[in-house]
Length: 252
Image (cartoon, rainbow, N blue to C red; front, side):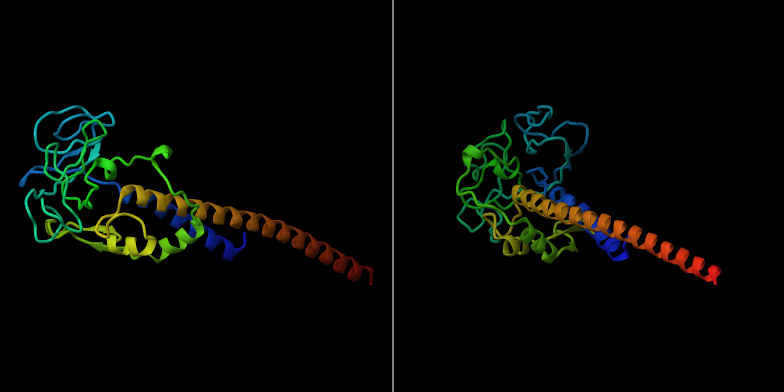
C-alpha cells in the first residue's frame, strides 16, 4: 500500500472517530436545582428526582432534580432570582435564565412527558422549553430548509478550537475537553445563543462531518486499490524484464 495513502487514511480514520465523539460531548446533563444537591450518576436506567418519565426512566415524584433518561448527570445549582451574569433569573436578559422543575418562573411550557430544561443551562429568551434537552426533529415542525455542504462543515470542524478547561464551579482537579460556545457560534452560525451549544446543532455538525469523512475515506480506498493494481502490474513487468535479461546473458 502506498505509504502516503496509508498515512492519510489513518489520519482520516482518527478524525472520523473523534467526530463520532463530538455528538456525545454535546449531550446535555441534567442537574439538581437545589444548592448542595447530590450528583445523579446513575447508569441503571433510573432517573433523577422530578416529575414524569422519559426514555425508560423510572418515575420519581420527589421534588428536586430534573428528570432525564438513564446515564450520568451533573449537579449545577440553579438560580431562580435575578442574577448579574444573565445566566439565570426572572428578569430580561440576553440569556433569559435556567429552567427549573415544573412551575419555575422561567418555564414557558412543558413537553417530553414532563421533562424540562436542565438547571444551570443558559436558555435564550422565549426558548425555555425542553427542546434543548430532548430536541424535536419532526419535519412537519420545521421550515426554511437548506442543503448543507458537509465538506465545508468538516473544514470548519477542523478549525474549531478545542481546549481543556474547568468550570468555575468545579472542584480542584476536575477537567473537561471541548469547544467554547462562542467559538461554535462564530464557526457555524447556528443556535440561539453564543453561550450554549444546543445538542441538536452539535449532533448535526458531527453527522455532516462524518459524511464528508466517509466520502474522503472511500476515495482513498479506491485510490489505494488502483495503486495496488499498478504496483502489481509494474512488479510483473520488472520480473519479466529480469527474466529476459538473464536469458540473454546465458545465450551469449
